[in-house]
Length: 98
Image 1 (cartoon, one colour):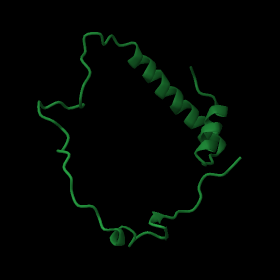
Image 2: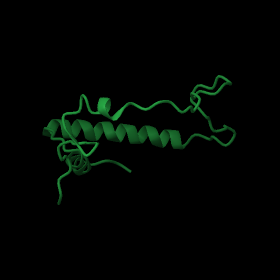
Image 3: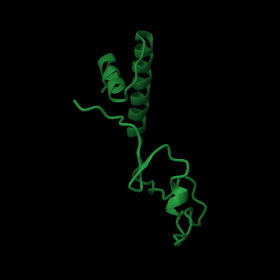
Image 4: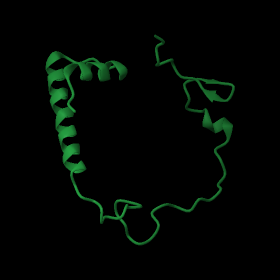
């Protein structure tokens, strides 16, 4: 599988990004390098490798205890919000309809 300039244009459109032509070529090459590396990883024989719970295993749990704590009061929650409506953050629309 390889990425074409049209694929990069499509990804850019979905991401709402605009690139110059030379950037499209560069990104196409970078995406293809990443896919080549992923192909190399897929060739590895991992049958005797146990799945990891965490990339760095120390023998003890890496996650904090799940404890109930007091929530931030609603009044403080929206202090820095640019806009709020019915106890929800209001943000500008970012997804355009087709």
